[in-house]
Length: 382
Image 1 (tube, rainbow, N blue to C red):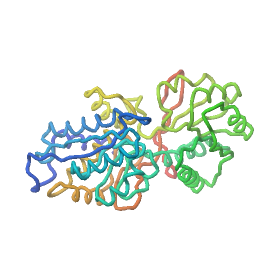
Image 2 (image 1 turned 180 degrees about the horizontal axis):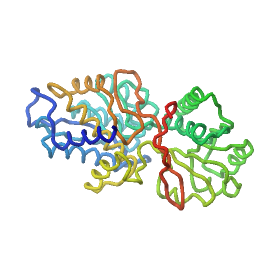
Image 3 (image 1 turned 90 degrees about the vertical axis):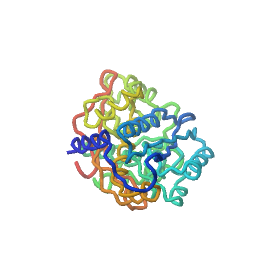
Image 4 (image 1 turned 45 degrees about the vertical axis):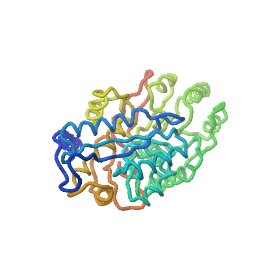
């Protein structure tokens, strides 16, 4: 069913089905904004080009009722002042109707009030900041770190059937409350609690943390910090019977090569694992990024998805397309099944938006990631 819905969406994009009447002249463009990390500490250079590629596909097929989509991307370099200036310029100077495919680590927390005050919606490709999931005018297309953490805990206890599930985390400023909420959600669903909870993991010698986990009898460890030194020391400690389950940021080819033979290492992904292009939804994404010579990453998956769902909602608008009509359309839309993720995506009228839940899992084998067969694990649903 999900694949059929995507086929229908792609057909709509290619045929350029019109969705509005009246309003601005056909020569006008529909301006769309995006705030991305092109430079700085959190870089996502593949995201804006992937969103633009989807828009160009729509434009080549006639646009939206003859109007072209124009993406205006701003680099905030993970700098608070630049991020705020970028949002203000997009909204006030450029007159964008929405923000689509943002991938900034600081945008949501800094600009959420501005988005609400300006009655504009943002559909980030990558939600990072907790504020991305707790704001009335922002709805990312990824689960984000906290829904993902709940899924990892649920996978450890319910799929892998472990009784002693442990957490070894590096906690970034402002994320402690989200982590506690994710653990509570898992506990409420399963009636279980952590055998060991350590949120003091640093970047130095991992030995003390691993010794503590080993002494606690941990059968599964949910982990989010450095990969190489951690697993080298886990090998030294003889922790070959422990399932180490990592967050999505560890899902890279380089990290797969750092896992020593004999250790069990898993990663929970936010979208379909991008390393297997035969999975549902990856065919659409792969076609877009390959044609446009864009890097194949999970972030570019989020970019294509954000652009696709935006276009689908835009095509359902009757009448003029402007900021007001676009916001109204997203606040009243029906859920969209999209096979790159585990649950339908919807914006809706709420004060907080975290519509995507669940994770697919990969396991390190022979220096590469192997996709596991369970499909998306959605807490409370499988």
